[in-house]
Length: 383
Image 1 (cartoon, one colour):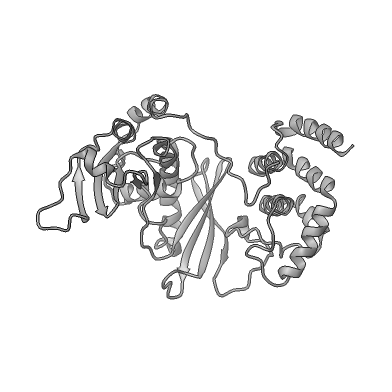
Image 2 (cartoon, rainbow, N blue to C red; image 1 turned 180 degrees about the horizontal axis):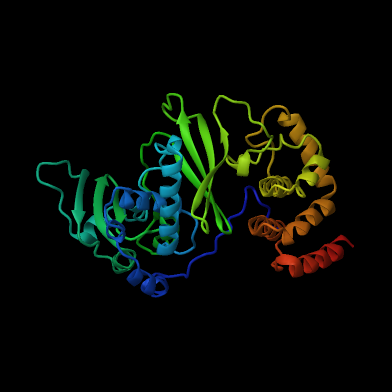
């Protein structure tokens, strides 16, 4: 039985293998223009907003190449929001999300230098240097680089060589990293670390509406921010209008036990002093309360030991009482997750299904029809 330690991922895997990937995105690559060329420079900062849109969309797709229509939609939303609400004009997504770093297998730390034929610059330490190269000399990596529009390849050496890839096309770096890691010549792939001011922007798409959370780092932010000012804004894709839904300053007491739109999401149990409050939240009219409750219930049913990012007024003692109440009536808890399979919010329904599959090892479907199959399974397993 697989038990969840944290909220399960809801995005599907991309096709396996470099060849399959190249084939699957070939048409998309043809349709996707380089980021700098998709929108001409204009008074609205088109290219800059587009790069921000790509950064915001990171992690929201299963294929490495982002859909250019989604990029354009988020770009338009950012333009409308910044024009109407100057208060968030200085909040930017985390810096350039289009840089991916590849590291060779541990057994071949100098692989990229050897295969690329790069030579350390004269007069420099042979172990510490950087150089821009045209190709790596490894077929799988070079093929993916062409498919994803890696227009800048920097070979860096600090004892172990690494490749820094910068993409001209709109790429989901997390999805691209998974594909590069399938190659034998790649030990690991990860997004480049960047220094930033602690600000970030999150996107929560809900049908015709795009919800944005603008978070501005507060205080000195040295070495890292510990508090943020949050602005919750919505862009309506049909009316092309932007609205401010809520504001949560860092020095103000949170009005609700659960943050607006569940962002920031800490999955803490302190919103539920009693187990009945947890089950009641699963039927709350606010989708983010139901989402938070599904996460907490799923994590309590898993093998997590002790509170996570929990604090007053519940703390460790309240956590243990809540966890015991959930585990003592596991059938009720699983049934409550099953009830959310036909939730009116598709994300809440998918989350409930992901937890059910993780917790039980079953691969039954979701939705209203799936809920019937899950209830049948619960009856049989309880006999």
